[in-house]
Length: 313
Image (tube, rainbow, N blue to C red):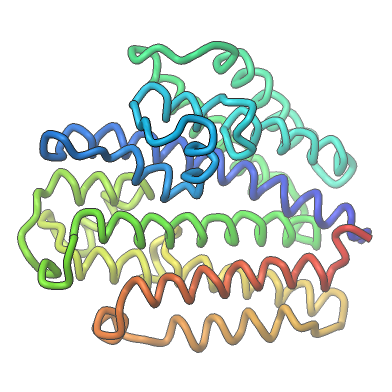
């Protein structure tokens, strides 16, 4: 496969995953802002989680109004990570790799682009926001479903999956890092009783509320949430699950091409070194330190995949 095709597939699915994650973060911010004590601003935390904090500050300063933050995240053309820009970039990549996609996947991406461009052509009214956020999730899920249901399990599929899980791992790690310390402001607070609505909102932001309740019951506790989102291999947005899927799909590429590259060693190292700890070891050593190490490793792995498979050659 040409490196340009591999890169187009990888980034197309990263952009789609990121747009869905952004919609989920906005919804979580909406719910959390309703449960926070008066005077506290949840929206700066949402921007920080989405890695849009500095860009927003450069454009608007420290004025974190709900309407302005949501508009920045959804449709501001000066924000390269706004949903509108992400969907445009996903479609541009899909056009580049059109021959690698099935008709259903291409139509899903194209429809996603047309519908969301129409919905985000103007500022979203508060009454329309739930519908728009749901539409973003549904349209990206449709592309993912078409991919699972129609694409041949070859290198095209593998690069698509790697892009999805690199992005998803990064998103879950960021939510854990920022949200855990927003709601637990000091180490002394770990394990204390906090409002269930806030914790359920965090779980909901990664589609984990139902799975958590099946596994741990109705009472969300910080330690168990951390364990579920980091180490539970059944949870499709946990760090462990994403790491395993990245390694699996890189392994399929290695088998197909008959070549082991540096990225394969890095993926194995990430899985074995980072994910073979108990949750108590993670919390004792420091959740923030663990997450920062994981984020750095995932970013380095993503960069190495681009180098090894010559995305820009």
